[in-house]
Image (cartoon, rainbow, N blue to C red):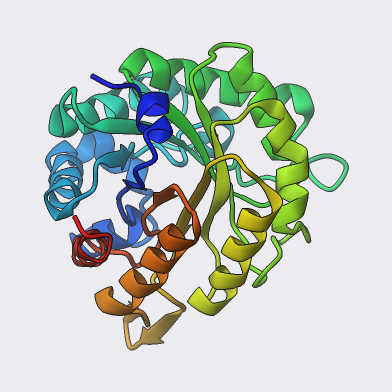
Length: 289
C-alpha cells in the first residue's frame, strides 16, 4: 500500500472526511457528551460515520480521538484510559478503511491556556501529546494530525512531545476563528514561519468562521509556503434555529469553495463542523472523482 507521503507526492489532491461531533449529534449524541465517549459506548456508530464518509468519496479518515489526551480527559469518566481510547479509535477507523485507506490520528488542543495565562506547562503539554501520539501510532494510523489549534506555544510543545516518540508524518492545522486570525492573533504566515522549519508534512487550517474568511486564509497559506496545504473549513457559519444548529453552506456551496482551494493548489481538502457525508460527496464530484 502506498504510504501517506507517497500519495502526497503523486500530485493528486487527497479528499479527507467531514465533521465528527456535529454528525454524531445528528446521530443521537446527547448534549454535553464528548464524541470520544462513543469509541467505547457506541463503536458501531463510529464505524457507521467512517463508512458513510468513505462511501461519499473520502479516502482519508480522521480517528475519533480529538479530545483523547490526558489533560482534556482530566477527572472525567475516561481519565486514565488515554492509551486504550486512542488505540481503539485508530482500530475502528482501520476496520472501515482497510489497508488501502489512509487513517489520520486526530489530536486536538488540551483546552487549557499555556503558562503564564493558564495552568498548561511545557512539560505537562509535551508528556500529554507524547502519550496520545504513541497510542495512535500503536493503533496503526498512517499520519498524525494536530488540528484546531490556536496558540503557538501549545502547538510547538505538542510537536516536541510527538517527535520524542515517533517520526510518523505530521500535519499541523490551526483554527482561524477570528476570521483571518486565530484566537491568539496568529496569521497563516505566522503559522508557516513557525512550523515549516520543523519538517511537517502539511500545514493549514480547519474549522474557523465563514467560507469567505477561509478563502483569504487559504490564499495566504498558498502564498506563504511551498509545502502541502491542508484545508478543512466549516460548512459556513452556524445558526441556531430553535433547538437545532444549522450550518449555512449547503453541499454545493461548500464543494464550490473547496474545489477552488484545490484548483489554487491545496493538496488535502475536506470539511469540518457541519460537513456531512452529503457535503463530502459533493466535494468529491466537484473534484471530478
